[in-house]
Image (cartoon, rainbow, N blue to C red; front, side, top):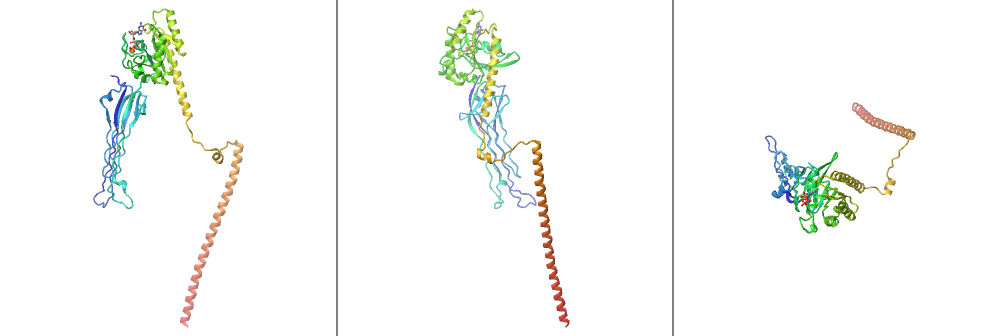
Length: 426
Ligand SMILES: Nc1nc2c(ncn2[C@@H]2O[C@H](COP(=O)(O)OP(=O)(O)OP(=O)(O)O)[C@@H](O)[C@H]2O)c(=O)[nH]1
Ligand SMILES: [Mg+2]
């Protein structure tokens, strides 16, 4: 079953709690706090894979829950981190949170962390301070992110087939690619989109066939316009019209109206119009239908093909390939321009004039500057040496003064002693 919209409750893992513990060991008195931190809770990670093409799994599994982080342990042991939950989704899946796109997985094996696990709480070892040597507190693990994620699958293709039911869209896809969509001579044979790769010379293009549209599809008539989301990312629309239609121009305009109502950007997408089932029909009739279409096609090329006899199919594929290449080039240029337009931070003129400036100089000029620099450097060195000499001399004279003073004191003591001795003898 093809499912392209789903809602799922994502619950990242809670962080583990920090613990209160004290080091107790033989011969170690008051070993101090050693409670470890809790581990991080597991993230919820979406992984795009080309092996899936539906969001059906989420219908049966409406809740995704990642593992909790382990609690911390004694001896500063950190708790085990919760294992992230890897969820496979088809390429082209958009993940929304409160209506905002938080991940767009367009490439095979592309990953995105959709919900972050909570951080672990601190163990008591973290809470020591000069006044608190034995903290008996620890942190609780943070809650992981938890919300209802909206998933939307938008197929990634180069060319989107649009048109009324029974126009021959699926037949064309089956002829140019290895896809095997259901084909029958009644309306709404195709109920879900089909993808097929068509080889064109030495390249290839990816084509998406969606259920037929009818007048009023935007109001829910027929299968509605919900499947147009699968051609929203295409580079070119291939508009298919049955050549046996009574009024091909009116048919074309009816589909255009539906495209415009669905999305402005989709209505502006480059387009090629194919008149289908043209084998065995008079050239005049084909020309008449083509002319009628050209009048309302706003310059879009109109080609006549037959999927049954393969007439005009190769030429049409080449046209599609060229249009796709042109569109992708234009898109890349727009992205480059947008990047160039990114705001940059710069200094105002006053600050710039005060700022350092750097100037390129010729070799001769640079030698002159080097000579001047050398002179200044040698002067500085001399001044430095002179200063060192002066400091040295001052230190020596100070030492001499101190030595003289000590000698004087000693001499005084000696003479005093001699005088006292003589007086005693006398
Ligand atoms: N003679 C002829 N019949 C064709 C050609 N292409 C398609 N058909 C027939 O047209 C009918 C409708 O073809 P589909 O490919 O199922 O048309 P569709 O546009 O996919 O129709 P839905 O899936 O209902 O939207 C089938 O009976 C096809 O055999 C063609 O080139 N020549
Ligand atoms: Mg079909």
